[in-house]
Image 1 (tube, rainbow, N blue to C red):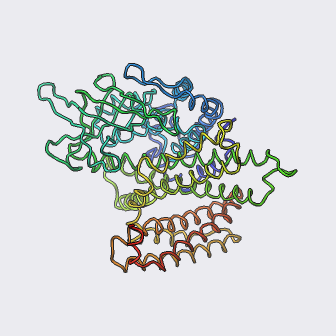
Image 2 (image 1 turned 180 degrees about the vertical axis):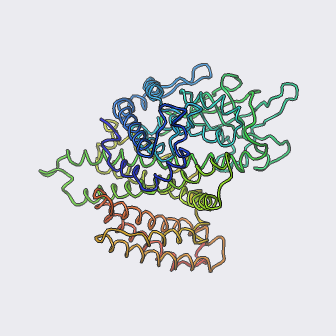
Image 3 (image 1 turned 180 degrees about the horizontal axis):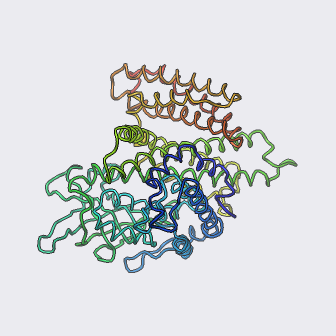
Length: 566
């Protein structure tokens, strides 16, 4: 079984027209072809390379990672002598992806990477997550190398990135017992030794994904006497130097193959990454944006997994003399699951393309001065990426949870049993709307794009794009939703009351996301018949959601807040 080839939606998104610009920027007009024999010579060659690598990812996931998922969930990792030992299946998975050269996918070739854009890398994450969401947390953390590449020195890049490309793992050590969502409260201490010409880290980190990784990015307090984000810096810790013990692995509900660790730093030797005092303000924000896009991909992969499980069961399970998929109550659930899957995937890859363009231009700006046109392009896509990332992560993770719930429902009592994969995937899904920023924090990140009109402006852009004649009616319905959205935003902004805005923020953000995803899936349907049903179902769903939220907002009185506070 190949998890890439059996999902034609992936190839559809890979072949988006914007990829021509993305690949041209990433490949610097194919200048690597004279230095590396595996570098593409033109756009078609590059796309063929992405396609072939994704096919390898799909094969490994279908033939190795997915079959190992149940045993990994049962066995889990262990702590032995303050070190993590992976489950046997996890180690087999890591060996397979390393031998296939799938570590360091997005890193430049000069460091041993494949120099892939973000979009095919995120597509691989989507596929890996479908096979085992817990394993994605290990494989996907190679994304930390992007932060090291962006903000580390050239010496650090040359020492660490090739190790990741050869298969070493990474972690980002951010949270602490008293610092979860509020990372300004981080207190792990970083002290510089003049005698040793290095930094030493002391303290405790908690809830660290893959906490016994080879290379760590650590957020620590470098400025003595500070209590806020301005006193925090980013450090690189190399496990080869010792000084960090795994105290325990958390006993989690799901993603059990991924060791979530409590770490104790005892004079752990580390080196500064980038400049002092910018650890949270600049570097972690960049790191988290990348991680949030990764969780959006994980969410879509989970949605694909549970949809497949539900569809297969509904076709096989017979009640009252016929397969349950023939009952309206069941095919209603399945069609909405597929619509949410297609809509969240469309949003994911729209976001990844925005990230691709601004990141590539950002990278080029380190080599030469951008032209005025390139600077404007970089600014435009950076804003789009920043505004779309919380939508992709927030709504994608919520849809993953909803689809996992519905998958269990279709299985009935059987879905509550460990005999079926949906029980494990249901547990795995729950974390997606919590870690790397809860859904509530994604709303906090997104709401300014509601009030400034950025989402509405992008919706208007989508309204101007042509669709196939048979979808003009759906586009017109989306335009009507946008009018209701604009009126709801105006109603709240006119209040000039921050508490009122905070209270209805999630509703406003969801309306914007519903309309945006509606446009994206209609555009997909215009180009590919496989999205036809999802376009109809999702626009109908979005209409109901928009009506629900705008009705609430139109009738809302700030005096009612007292009832909710109680």
